[in-house]
Each structure stands twice: as structure tokens, then as C-alpha cells.
Length: 125
Image (cartoon, rainbow, N blue to C red; front, side, top):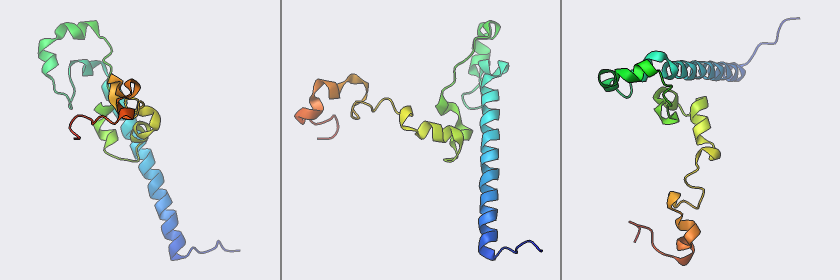
């Protein structure tokens, strides 16, 4: 018995699934390489994205070898794709903590009752 021949539509669907799997694999590789780059010993002095001015001014920081904390926003290459795992992580509702109080930020305007009293927000009069 011969294997069933796929029609043109089924071939395209199979090809699309293969491309999606390849894209996910490449995005994971990019995220891993980015993580390695930011955590490398030499990146404490500067990076391609932020510049190397720190290399000339802070040689003592290199001696201390403190781990530089990088922000998720620093991951320019991973964030360039909306389907990357890093971008999906940032799009999650848990990642947005500044808008938890009704969109008024960290000053607590919502908790003070300004939003309920109908006061105009700055710049929206």
C-alpha cells in the first residue's frame, strides 16, 4: 500500500507548520544567544546596544565583576519579533504592573479617588 499523496492544500499546511517550527527554533536560539551576551564577563564594560563608554571610565567595575542586571527592554533582537518567547513574556498581563491601579501610574491617583470624582487627567482637558 502506497502512502497517501497530499493535495496542494495539505502540502501548504504542512509547509507552514514546518516554517512555524523553524521560526520558533531560531527565535529560541536568538533569545539564548542574547542572554549569553548580556551575562558574559566582558559585557560589564558595555554592549553593542548601549555603547562602550563605561569601558574607559570604570575599569574598577571590571575588577569587581558585579553582575549587571539587564532589563527585558534591552533585548532588542528578541523583541524585534512579536512571536519570540521574550516578546510573548512581556505581552503577558503580569508584565504590566504600572497600570494595575486603573491606568493612573504609580502616584496612586486611582486610590485617592481622583478617577471616581471625574477630575481631568493632565493633558486631557
